[in-house]
Length: 273
Image (cartoon, rainbow, N blue to C red; front, side, top):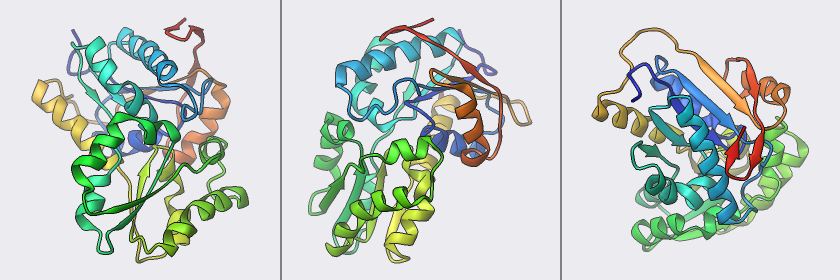
């Protein structure tokens, strides 16, 4: 059984989940973390639900083998495709997933028009459909998948000409429809909030879901009695199925701190060596 000093397991298709990790570090710096970025398979967005479930199952097994006391699925696509499956498959551990922040957007919009940026798999998933059905009555949603944006962020290009063009292509038509809120439905996207805000202007609210996810993780730890009670800034172990130097080079930019990144390899879609 995990203890109070056991780590929180966090995973994403790549470095996008670092936006959630960043919020967790701000709220719970004393909690040790194991972060897995599946950069060997990024992006998840265009992949099938079954394949994403397989990847998520393998990563969860890996994190549990490293004594994780809580699993944070810091990936909207994996949450949409695999969160229910993971909770059934690993019922002995708690999961925190990503849910597009349609509810707070619907509650605060003045114009009744909201833009949502997310991957194709997120839009196609039952989780998104459920959130829209429950919370978006009377609100008009304008959706865009921002093709290529995840790849740009994985390369660390947060303010390049190409990145700006992708976002302008998504946001300008929404602005013409008089949106006053933008929901970020991918954990990679908070890293380009400054660029988004430049494009949409000061009268459009941009919702980053990461702080709410960090708060939920803290609540679950406290409820289960496994929150770390020690003081200080705990250690993070980083793992990637891609190239470690690439992830390591992005950590100071995306997280504001660095660390060693260990390489892992997949045996098959469901098992990590």
